[in-house]
Structure formats: C-alpha cells, structure tokens
Image (cartoon, rainbow, N blue to C red):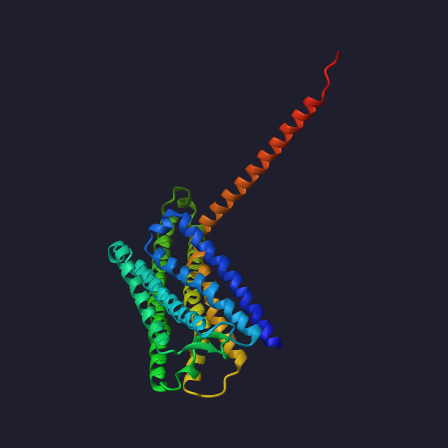
Length: 359
C-alpha cells in the first residue's frame, strides 16, 4: 500500500471509532434523560444520530475494505444497496442540520412564541419531509442504476461510468441533488445562524448596558460611598465599565465561536466532496485518486463531529453524561464493597469453623 493509502485508512478507522462511540453516547443520553426527549430539537438530533450510526456501520467499513483491497469486495446488488444508503443518509443528515438551524433561529428570534411556532407536530412534518426528500433522490439513482463502486472514492456511491447512456439525465440529477441538499442547507445555515448571531450580540449589548447602569447607580447612592465620591467615584465607575465591556466581548466571542463551528464544520466536511463531484461531473480536469478518497473521508468525518457540535458540548448532555458516569461508578464501587464484605464474612466463618473446642 502507498503511504497515502495507509494514512487515509488510519483516518477512516479513527472516524469509525469516534463516530460510533460519540453517537452511541448521544443515543444513550436521549434514552436516559426525559427532558431531552420532550424537546422538539430532540427529534432532529435523534434522526441525525440514527443516520450517522447507520453510515458508520454500513458505508465506512466498506470504504476501508476498498482502500485495502483496491476494489469492490461485494456483489453488484450489495453495492447498490450500500450506494442507496450513502445517498439517503448523507442527504438526510444535511437536511436535519438545516432543520436544527431553523429551530435555533425561531428559539432565539421569537423566544416568547417558540412553543407555539415549533411544536412536535411541526417537527414530525419536517422530519417526514427530510425522509421523503432523501428517499426520492436515492430511489431515482438506484432505479437508473447510477449507483456502483467508484474507484476514485473507494466506495459504493453515485458512479459516472454507470451513466454513460444517460449522461444528460445524470448531470441534471447530480446538479439538482447537490443544489437541493448541500447548497440549500448551506444557505439555510448561513441565514439562520447569522440572524441568531445578530440577535445574540444585540442582547449581550443590551444586558451589559442595563448591568452597567445598575451598578453605577448603586455606586452613586450607596451610603458608604457618599462621603468619598469625590475621590473614588470616577475610578469605581471606570472599573465597572471596563468589567462590563470585557464580559460583553467574551459573550460575543462565545457566540461567534459557536456559529462558526456550526457553519465551519459543515463547509469543511462536505464542500470538498461536493466540489470534487462537480469537478468530475463536467470533466474539468484530472483528479488525484488520493484526493478523491480524502474528500469522501472528510464527508464521513461529519458523522464524528455532529455529536459534539449539536449534543455533547451542551450543558444538558454533559450533565446527563456526568450523572450516568457517577451512577455507573457508584454501582461498581458498591459491588466491590459488597464483594469485600462477603469475602470478609466468609473468612470469619472459616476461621470460626477451624477453631477446635477445648476439652
């Protein structure tokens, strides 16, 4: 194997392990915490987790085998099934991210009307649309036999070589697919999260202004400060003002960092693969096979990033994980203590039985 193939293979193994463990943890938190299950975004997170897990156990291992064996290891029917799942799961996960961004936008921009605007019924309708959208595109590709093993990506996916007789239809299909999945989701992410960032910055500034005015008012009216205002009033006011400005800057940085993470991970993971697809579709030049596999692996890596971006870094999920860990550790420590007590009682019984009665 080439050194690049070895590096990509190790990368795929790392993605599989991280994606499998992190998505399973998200699923456990969802099943354990009733509050998470009651929330409307929980349906989209559950759907995203399901897609990531299925992609991890079905498509990623076959890509790893394809890298090692330099070819398809399954039959044509099996490869078409895996290719169907590849298109369906990737499309479904992208649309789920767009739905989560819309939910976050409504929650931040319309906080008082959130529960009336976004209900479980609306979430189920949105979830049904993502499934119908994904099923339609993946079914069309399978019916036209456009799915097969693609050596450039070392995976069973949409294959240009299988569309030689229907070249025009395949081009239209591919452009519409990426326009209504990647491009549409990217536009939704940018519009909604930039609106969220704008509102968050406005609220941060408003909160800090109110806090600053309140603190300065307390300084002016505090009885202990009345006799010394001519000496320390300006210094204290400047200190309060500087502290509020520092907190405002930190809040803005946190909000910007979160929004950048949502949009940045989506672009970094999916954009190289989609651009490579378009580049290949219109024969714009020779594509390095190592780059093709790497772009596919970057798309896979989104399944490993999503649990941290949307779930595990949130306070509610961290608290749930902490409670689960404490519960497991307490149970294990209780079991070990019980064993020690049982062993001690058994030893005492043996010692008692070994004592011979004196005559």
